[in-house]
Every structure is written in structure tokens, then in C-alpha cells.
Image (cartoon, rainbow, N blue to C red; front, side, top):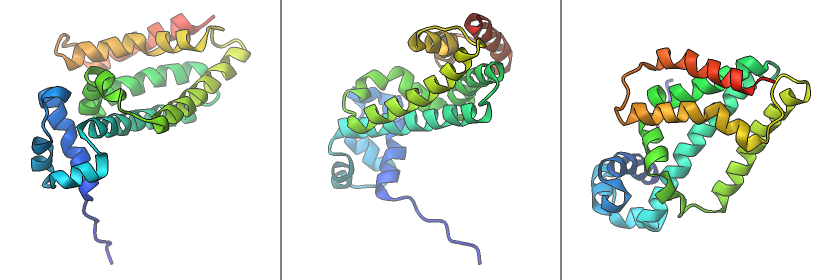
Length: 197
């Protein structure tokens, strides 16, 4: 017997509806009524689950960031012992996640993230620490045997994904028409060459 798919909860519907509303109107311009109308949920339900519009924006931010971080960590797990493949795969994961798989979430993180982050709590801070601990652990493993430059991790991370991040900004705002598949090898080469000793 085929299991019956479960319907999304009101919390899930509100969270899913909030993303396009925030992207269309911005955090300041979006109304709770717009979100609830799109989610077919009551205003009371939104306040029950998120406390406020700011709380909802924080939840959208946390959901999108968690999705992104899971993708990056899965990529690193596929390349535990090959520094070059790991670096190139991380650039590919970043570009594909932002431009092909989750462009709306990427737009939210890139263009509304600063406003939404202010309402996030200690859970996000803990999740970020855990994420960067795992990524920096992967990095330091390869630094230890000389495959990657012995840089401060913040610098290494900026070199690794900074150019790809800027390309995503240009692409998501329509300021470049270069296809992802054309940009990827150039940006991956750049990251690898900049990070090798």
C-alpha cells in the first residue's frame, strides 16, 4: 500500500509563502496579511509559530542557510581526502545551489540576509559554529600535509568562495549573462590556484 503524503503544516505553509513575499516586497514592505493570504493561514497562526514578522524573516533565513550548509557539508563528505577535488566541488556546489537549485533562497540570503539575521537566535549561532568547525577541520587536514596554503581560515574561505559569491550576485541581479557551466571551471581554477602553496 502506497503511503499517503502528509499535508504541510500551517507553519510549513507560512514559511514557504513568506519567501516569495519577502523577495517581491522586501522585508519592510511585506505584510503579514500577504504572507497569510498566500499560505491560506490565519494571522493568529503566524504569530503563534513565529511571534512577529521579524521572527518569520529570521525563520526563513535560518531555513535557507541550513539548506545551503547541508549542501556544502555533503560535498565535503564526498571528498574527504582529495584537496583539489574538494575545493573545486565546493565552488561548484556554491554556484549550482545559488543559481540552479535554490535561487530564491540565495536571493534572500544575499539581499535580505542582513536584515533578517538580526532577529535570529542562539540556535543559528550554534549551527554556524558547527558548520565552520567542520569546514575548517576539512581545510586544516589538507593544510597539515601541504596540499593547501596555511592561511587563516577566514581568509581561505573568502578566497575559496568570494569570487563565486560575487558571480552569483551578478547573475541573480541580471548583471551578467555568462552561463553557470561557463563560469564554473574558471572560478574553480581560480580558487584552486589561489589556495595551493
